[in-house]
Image (cartoon, rainbow, N blue to C red; front, side, top):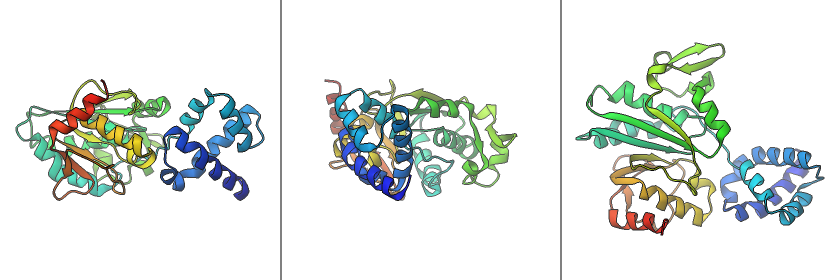
Amino acid sequence: MSRVKDAHCVAFLHWALPRLGLRWAGYRKVRRRVCKRVARRLRELGLADVRAYGERLEADPAEWRTLAALCPVAVSRFYRDREVFEGLGAEVLPALARGASRLECWSAGCASGEEPYALALLWHLRLAARFPGVAFRVLGTDVDARLLERARTACYGAGSLSGLPAGWREQAFEPRGRLWCLRGEFRPAVELAQQDLLADLPAREFDLVLCRNLAFTYFDDGGARRALERIASRLRPGGALVIGLHEHLPAPAEGFEPWPGCRAVFRLTCVKNARAAGASLHA
């Protein structure tokens, strides 16, 4: 898009995003991705510009669902924010595993699978030998069916794997043309499902939830609070929530306190308040 068109699209996003429960601030750095999708939608509809698209949205409420599907932005790679994964491996997962027979983890907004697979690799390559009696399972959910199909193939370009610890790529992946595909022994720990965080919830509870660079970046204040309440309703007492390094929990984040020594990790401590908040979602 030209600079003029980009300016028009930015004005359009300022108008449209709040109506979708989304925050412009979260989209500022990735706006060009969304603008390209909007431009493609204009061509499909035969519309001249975003002003005409705005008129179409006002006249056809169903088109808002199409626009909402254009807005999710996936920026995913293995071991994104390495500091966070190192903290999980050194502090959080060992603390959760002590005395446990199984660990249940949930990667909300898992995109094409890098995060849940990275979590599984962290456990199997670094921690499983220390906790041989602990079963480990990760559920990855995302609203985008196309990204989940890519996740199920578990094949990635070399750039997506560049952040992995030394030797992990060769140990856990096998080359297939220009891609690296996760070896079969590391796949069973990860389950994938299509879910919308604000509309669906997994049926089981979890010891660890990762919700990074999703709800607390893109959702508006009300959506971020609802997302936190829903996560709390599925997090076991003493469990951990991991968010993005540059994100903040929406206030009031009752029941959560920072995990000592780890950035972007919070422990669920106030079970009564968190459970009450989660129960209110289903009343």
